[in-house]
Length: 133
Image (cartoon, rainbow, N blue to C red):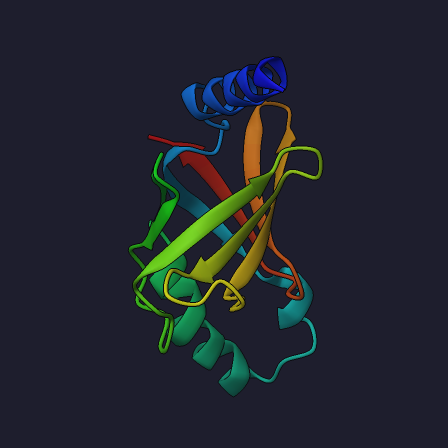
C-alpha cells in the first residue's frame, strides 16, 4: 500500500513540476471571423468589429501555473475570477469560474500549423492567431 501511495505521489509531483505548454501569456495577433462575415449585413459587420474584433485584437490570454486564467479583453459579462484546465491529448483548454467548478465560460482548441499557434473557440467560427510572450 505504501509503494502505491509513493508512486501516485511521484506522478502527481512530476505533473505539477512540468506544467503544460499552455502556461504563460499569449497575445492575439489576428482575429479571423471570415466564416461569419460572409453572411452578415454591413451593420452586423460593424457591430462584430466593435464588440468582438477590436477587444480581442492584441488581447492577452494568461494561463498561470496555479491554473488561474486572465483575459485582458473586456468581453461584456465574462467573469474575472477564472481558472483553466488543459487536456493535452485533445489540445483543449476549458475555462471555468473559479467559484463554480460546474460553470463553463469557454473551450479553446489549441492548434499549431507551420510553427504558428491558433486558438479556436469551440462553438464559434472565431480563430485567433496567437504567439507566446
